[in-house]
Length: 105
Image 1 (tube, helix red, strand yellow):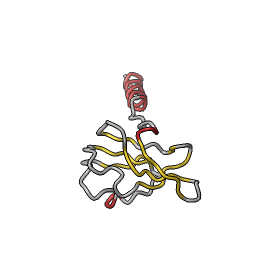
Image 2 (cartoon, rainbow, N blue to C red; image 1 turned 60 degrees about the vertical axis):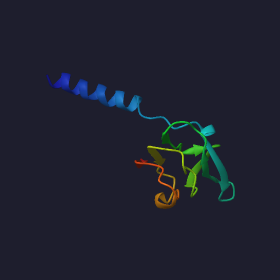
Image 3 (cartoon, rainbow, N blue to C red; image 1 turned 45 degrees about the horizontal axis):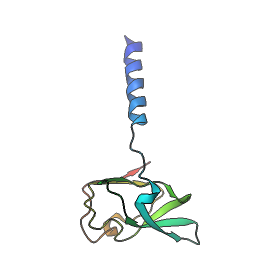
Image 4 (cartoon, one colour; image 1 turned 90 degrees about the vertical axis):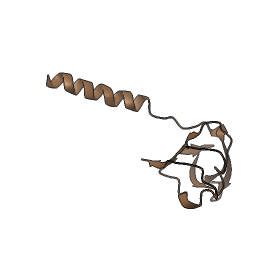
């Protein structure tokens, strides 16, 4: 019985990990180079998804900032920000753009 429960838990965790939301493609984001070309700031969103998962890296550089109006008037419902991003969530936009913002470890 314990083996069955352990197996079910292990399979559930594996399935959840396998189906975790993947980052949006780099092409969904407009960016500018910052910090002497060592990082990027997202300045716009060109994608069509209302749930956005920001990648940790774009152009092989870490995303460390999100511009003030990067997601303005896009009708987003969810934005997931990687831990390396240092976006001031409050000033990410002057318009209400999301109902759920979370950071991922």
